[in-house]
Image (cartoon, rainbow, N blue to C red; front, top):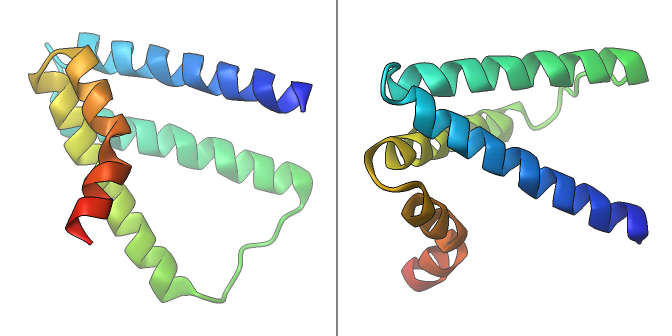
Length: 106
């Protein structure tokens, strides 16, 4: 339990740093480029971890994985656009309210 709490705190800290860096670079770099490089770096890290742990790529459920990837990319584009255009605190609050928006819509 103690390790999980520490990892949750570390995760929150790292995402806060990422948000601040996205806000800082959004002055000079388009948000779509930030999304591309964030996704590229994440893909490389996951690939390295999979190779290290000897995890094979799954061949089942590919269409749903593609749908998940498209919606994930759209979410990142919308989130990084929000970070670039409005104050960081407001963008963070909107992101954390997304479950409430989903509940109201469905």
